[in-house]
Length: 520
Length: 118
Image 1 (cartoon, rainbow over the protein chains, first blue to last red):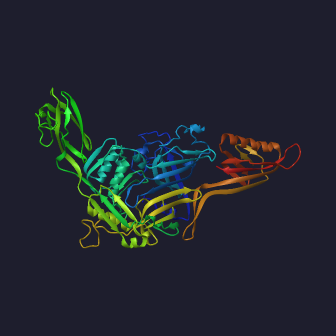
Image 2 (image 1 turned 90 degrees about the vertical axis):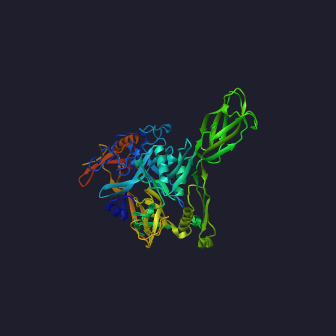
Image 3 (image 1 turned 120 degrees about the horizontal axis):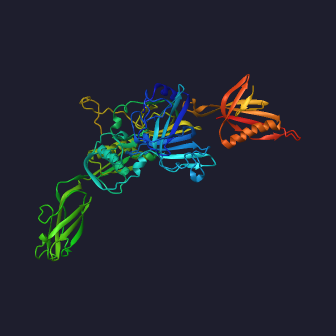
């Protein structure tokens, strides 16, 4: 939950609230590294300093020069949902409706002539803040930071303009691996950190929990979207990766919500705050879970290719040979004529029964790829010869085990028939975690009472994972859809998952024999 | 003591009506309470009704209206009447219809001037 003042808390529960919201768009995408962020006690109200995303965080998007379009705002909505049931990457989206009576947002090709008429295009940074006016002051907190996804929709008849935006997850969705790469022995947070660094994110722009899994081997193939890589890694941990309201990318591992402040109720919802409560239909029920994984790990040096090519190499010529390996290869020992682990043999006869010609052949070059190599051999003699044997050694990453588990909740199956869910993820490393993972999904989703969707008078400080109390039970928020409109007011539809607060064993604090449980 | 629109004195209306225009959404919660979310400040709306007005007085008002339409910029509205003062307020103008109920060459007309606080 975002920190708010006491006055805020009182105002949001008042029967009469005064809603404020703002939208800034960097139409011209002017970047100014010298922009000063607003500092209490230093900056002046009404001055030029920009309000930062979150106090001290200086993210790059803060450095754009924004146009404040708040006076044109007629309505907005934004939505952020964690992925259930197994976590992964979550993207927030937003929609902003603007009044265009004076033609400010009319693009040139529609006859526009405002100062923005050439800048009304997609991929513009956008900020949304919202809150309340109390004590005569507009008090707002960050709600959304992102980039517009498409050209604003303008209706000349209705004099309106609609903007649609994604948060920065959208950027990751459109970035592809352009060089195959592999890693060994890294935790999930280290891999994500490396990816974000490669993509140009500063460390202040993300916050990563320590990964619980150490991944023995991983391979990023050319053309894979970075977002898919991260999604797979995060799902293997049953974690979440998303951008919060302040613009910070967050990786939260599965234990993130098991300690304070997430174990304490942030808000108690009274029925005087709730407008509608709905039980979802049965479609979310999962009562059978299968988990499959084929984790890989690097192996000791071994023969990874052994063949008898029988390929003729003409006198004083070169010959290129591609070899494909059964597994991704971390290291390839270049074959040589007298090599121990990697070597080749040549002969003047195709079947190797003639005079040995190995000394006439040299390996001119070798290019190694993830799962293949290109070798160029040179026949230095004036006679043709045959490459009769090729043995290549290296360090492959082999499937080390086949993990499989199938669990079901019998009472739920009896009541609702089988509702299966399959998790296939090769980054799942152990049978015990596969079992725990399946059991956790069953615990949360085999019972229809576990989920609810309620519409409330907005509490804009609520964030993903916050624990709330509703109808005497504890619930954790995994989705928030907020809307601000003159017809509906300032409302939130929150998706909540029922929780039982468990105290987990902590070294140095918990005692052996106590009720504290071992964290999954 | 006068009514001034965009810096020009206009004829006093036969009747004047002031109303409030607040933008709010009302919700009823499961408990039964009714709550309101207000957006922005209250805005006033003035309706000035004129009966049987000379053409020259109408033209004065219409000229301001036409200028407002062409510029698209709200104009100032001031009342310095002894018991009804309005400090300078930016307003949008509506002059939607004009009716002629008195025959003759003077084209004496009746109309309503609606001023909405910007």
